[in-house]
Amino acid sequence: MASAVQNNTVSLGTDSIGKLLARYAIPAIIAMASSSLYHIIDSIFIGHGVGGYAIAGMAITLPIMNIASAFGAMVGVGAAARISIRLGEGNKRAAEHILGNAVLLNIVLGIAIMLLFLLFLDPILLFFSGGEAGAETLGYARDFMRVIMFGNIITHLYLGLNEQLRASGYPRKAMYIMILSMVICTILNPLFIFGFGWGVQGSAFATVIAQTICLLIQIHHYTSPKSFLRFKRESFHFKRSIVVNIISIGMAPFLLNVCASFVTRFMNTALLNYGGTGVDDVIQVTAFEEGVGDIYVGAYGIMNRVILLFIMVANGFNQGMQPIVGYNYGAKQYGRVLKALKYTIICATCVTTFAFVIGTFFPEYVAALFVEGGNSAADKAMIEVVTQGLGIAMLVFPFVGFQIVAGGFFQYIGRAPLAMLLSTTRQLLFLLPLLLTLTPKYGAMGAWMSMPLADGAAVLVAGTLLFVQIRKFKRMEREQLFGRNA
Image (cartoon, rainbow, N blue to C red):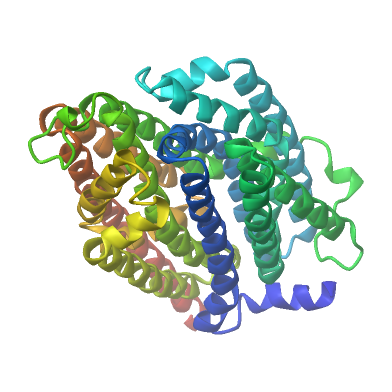
């Protein structure tokens, strides 16, 4: 088995790019889509089993969970990118040292984040709700996060080791593990929510149990003598250069998640304060005595999950590109690097264009999946808000796939500063100022409009940086050919 996977890693430098992208991207897409689908199914169970305010509570937990997982993504993606480059250089021992350091980092960070968030959970929830959410909404958020945080170290290790599985030549196994996690969660969710009556805590328990089972499978893989990369005792000690390299590359997804979390916080606060105040908002403040802001927050939570599904699929192509680009960049085969980039951009753009069609022409059907329209006036209002907001938020979504791939590409070739820049432009430089400017004036409509405007500006920045990098690679490729002919 190990020799077969070793041949797979070598084929990254010889097989056709289209074939390689299919081999690595399809499992990644299935895995990423299954993970995102689970979050959607989870929201459906909670919406139907607990209610619309429980979905609003989950929306408040989303930025907090993003920050917690940002540290795991920093280690997982950073280590995977470095492993691919080392394998491209033919240095398996260095790749195993990166693997060991990644595990240690995830353990340390997982414990630290768990303790920090559990000790200060109430102030954190109040901060990310803007201090405006109702007591019922905050109660749901608190119940969910207590369980999730106790399993934080498991989440970090599970997600990180799956990234390294994919980078070391096991894309299908990484896919099967993520699908297994989704299946277990999907089975346990209705049992815990409806059968045992545990509500949102049942959903959290289902998540932690599923990830624990999958982590045990991953540990078995990395301790098996049949595996290409394995846990080695000598690799489990911190080496400063490895840690710095992991964090430098992983800082881009870290900043992306952290920025998204703070933007979500300000989005929730803006919707709590100004949702229903704009003349074009479908639900006005006068429609309910209270809770209008919570309805808009819940609607944004639904929109986020739908948008995340398609971003995950685009990221599946991005992750499929990672070992191909990393290996060939390490082997200095720049023409193959550019071809992988081109194919991935085309595929990701097709995905986000399809998402645009769904969000523009069928938003009411998407909204109805999450909330039973006849359950209450609040649930019916939430469907109307999602129907209005989703189409606006996805106005320039066809171009988002390009921006996603560009950001990943700079990570995979080790250009940490540019990767970090692209990770922050959309969220901090564009979306947050637009959100703070437009929402007080136009209500929820201003919040929805800030999203496509930020996407469009971020695409322009990514296109400019990528154009410069492509020209550089083409020049390097010509220099290589000239040297050989000479």
